[in-house]
Amino acid sequence: MKPEYWEKAKRSLARKDPVLAKIIRAHPRVHLEPRGEAFHTLARAIVGQQISVKAAQSVWNRFAAVAVDVSPEKIVSLKKSQLRACGLSERKAEYIADLAGRFADGRVHLHRWARMDDEAIIEDLVQVRGIGRWTAEMFLIFNLLRPDVFPLGDLGLQKGLRLAYHGGRKVSLQTMRRRGETLRPWRSVATWYLWRSLDPLPVEY
Image (tube, rainbow, N blue to C red; front, side, top):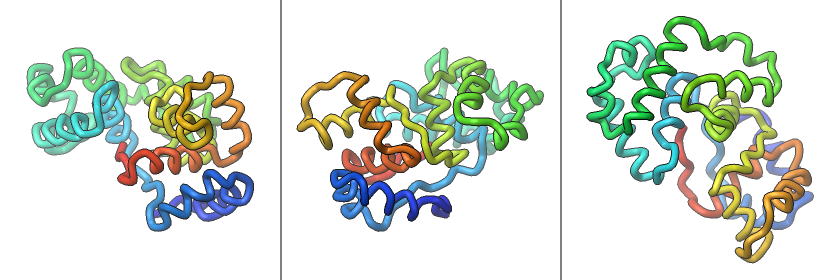
């Protein structure tokens, strides 16, 4: 299901940014797909940290096969050795076990997020082991569908900005941040299309 703001955001970005207009026209039939289950999204993001998309998918497939039901209650019942056997590093196995424990015992307060702004949710999420700002920002985009997230620590976004606006040459994060300011209030959508300019197949989280 397409986010309700998607078409409005596309039109707005295309009107004010000719570079993005070209990228949007090149990808007419794809859009951000919502991920409905919070634990699943965060666990998948942890799996994907610092490895390639292909490697992350391979590990996730093995993880899902072992877990059968990728739920907090199921994951807390697994031994660390079972998580490690899926291809998770020892640290990622600890992170996912900790995440599952927090969901299972209610320390993660999902019901509050709808009333919180983006930065407050990021602050809430980074209290969980293994969840840094990047993972929290991916969650805001892919699960909560927040429209104005600009994950400037993401290497794909940085590369997309360099290639689209600066001929591929290296520029400062400050320059990229200024570019992002021109894309408000639809920076999540702009980010998603800049990712598409590098890889036409959307990544799942």
